[in-house]
Length: 459
Ligand code: PFF
Image 1: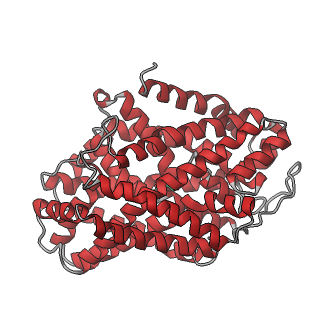
Image 2 (image 1 turned 90 degrees about the vertical axis):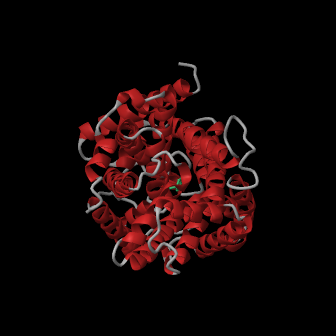
Image 3 (image 1 turned 45 degrees about the horizontal axis):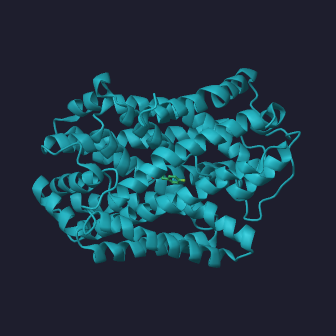
C-alpha cells in the first residue's frame, strides 16, 4: 500500500479524479497510443531512412521521455488544475517567476493546433472504415490503393464531412468529462488494438519481406542520420508520448495520491513504444512486398494496409476492425489534446464544461480546414517548403513540444525544491531518485537543446 506523502499540499481537482492507478495508466496510454504510433511513426521512419531514426527515437523515449513524463505527472498532481493554472500555482509556491505559466499556455495552444490536423486524419480513418466495409479493398493492388487514397483526399468537402464527424465525436466525450465512458472503453479497446496489430504483423510475416523489414528498422545505418532526422525522431518521441504540452500534466492532475509515478510512467512509455514498433513491423513488409515507396509520407498506411486487407483471407472483417480500432486510438488521444484548453476556460471564465468544449471544438474544427486544403487546393502553396499541414506539424512536434519539454525539465529539476520533488515522486530506491534528478536537471534539457540548435543550423 502507498505511504502517506509528507510535504504535499492538499489540493483537489475541481474536474475529478481517476478511480485508480490502473485507470490512469489506461487513460494515459490511450492518450499516448494514437495516430502517432500507427500512422505517423511508420511514415516518418520511412522518410528518414529507417533504423538510425528508430534508434534515436528509442533513445529519446528512454532517456528523455520517461523522466519528462514523470516530471509532468508530478507537476500535474501537485497543482491539480489546468496546465496554465497549475504552473501559476506552483510558481507562486516555489517563489518562481509568473513567466513559468508559459509552459501551460504553449501546451494549450499546441494541443489546439495538433488536434486541428489530428481530427482530419481521424476523419480519414472513419472514411476508411466504410471503404473497407464496402469491399473497396478487395483484390486491391498498390496502384489501386494509391488511386483510391488520392481520389479521396482530393475531395475537400468529403474530407471536411468526416473531419466534422470526428470533431463532434471528440467534443461529445470531452463535454461529458473524461472519466465516464472513456475509462471503461479504453479498458478493452486498447488490448484489442494490440491484438489486431499483431494479426496484421502475422500476415506481414507471410509476405517474404519480414526480415528485410527488420533489417530496415533495426540495423543501424548512421550514414542516414542528419540533424533534421534527429530532430524529427526527438519530436516524434515527444508527440507519441504526448509530452511537452500539458496533456500528461492535466491527466496527472487527476491521479490519486500515493500512485507510483515512476512505475506508471514506465508502463505507459513501454506500451506506447511497443505499439509503434509493432506497427512498423506490420507495415514495412507490405510496403516492400508491393514495391511501394517507404518515404510516401502521410498517406503511407492508407495506401499499404488496403493492399494487405484486400489480399488476406477474412480481410474484409480485419480491415473494418483495424480501422475501427485505429479510430478508437485516435479518439482517446484527441480527447486528451483539447483537455488543457477546456479546463483553462472552465477555470478562468467560469464556463460550464459543455460551453468550454463547444468553443474549443469550433475553433479547432475551423483550423482543420487548413490541413484539409493542404492535400488538395493548397497543396502547391508552401512556406519554407512545407504545406500548411507540414508547417503545423513542424511547429508543434519539432519546436513547441521540445521547447515545452525543456521548460518543464528546468522547472521540475531546478525551480521546485528537491524535497518537494522527492516526496511527490516517492521513489523508494534513493539511486532511482538520483538518476531522475540527473536526467531531468542536466541530460534532458541539454540534449533537447543540442538537437534543436543542431537542426536549425546553430551547431
Ligand atoms: N500521442 C498521440 C499519438 O501518438 O497519436 C498524439 C498526442 C496526443 C500528442 C496528445 C500530444 C498530446 F498531447
